[in-house]
Amino acid sequence: MEDRENSMLENEDKGAMQDRMSKIRILIVDDSREFLEVEKNFLSMEPHIEVVGEAVSGQEAIDLTGLLKPDLVLMDIAMPDISGIEAAKRIKEKAGAPYVVILTLYDNPEYKSLSEAAGADGFVTKSEFAVTLIPLINKLFSEKPQLSRKEHKKMSNILVVDDSLTMRRMIMASLRGIKGARFIEATNGLEAIEQIALERIDLMTLDLNMPDMHGIEVLNFIRQHRAYKDIPIIVLTTKADDKSRDEALNAGASVYLTKPFKPEELFNCAARLIGGLRG
Image 1 (tube, one colour):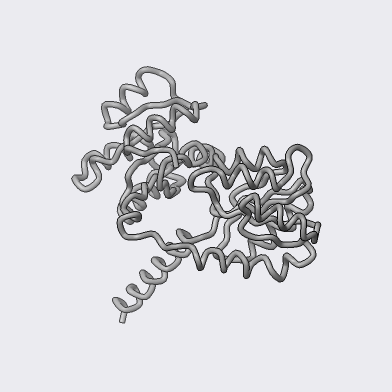
Image 2: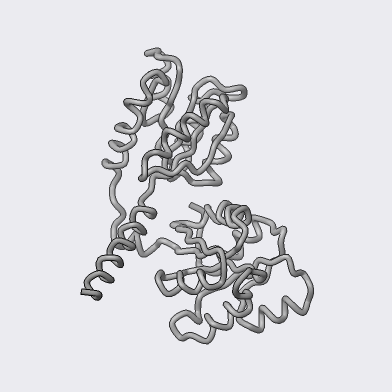
């Protein structure tokens, strides 16, 4: 009976993990911060949707799309710099572009035609978005081709280990351009070791100063285990002294970088270690 219960719990955990992996990542764009909050609260009620960023202008939307790599961009039309239609056009011109859905006050056939010409995948009015938006999103992603087994193998599992949420987000934002990047987070050394046992890890970024287990201990553990010893590890730390650097490199760190780090330098190191390319 106990084995059966453990098996059921394990299956539930796997199901929850798959749910997290399959979430639709959305960037919301509107010059009204009040409406952005409405959108975010509305979308957050859907367990399969994650709002990964907010933009208040067309250019910011373009920049964040390149940085965050969302699956879908919800775009207002009227904005202070460039229009949502122009922003949508520029986003859709890029290789591997996300879906773009125009969400606007203007229920106007001309705007709808311009949106379609710009490559937008949908057009929703704000007066009806509470009824029509989620069905449209679900329809778009139900039609999206599933990854083949070969494409799944191309995914790069990147474990980001740091007790600071802000720092983890900065690291992930810097590495979004790695082709097929999938991020796993750990807030301390013990969580990192647990994640390594659960997942195939292609690259790890590792802080040294953590509350339970020092980063050097994590390095020693990984390098002493046959199954994990070849994982590339980038140490990211505030410790800039030579002693700490030498200790980490001698313990098996692949690269040693200090905070505040340069995003481009981190990206280049990571891409070199796992053979990643910009998405």
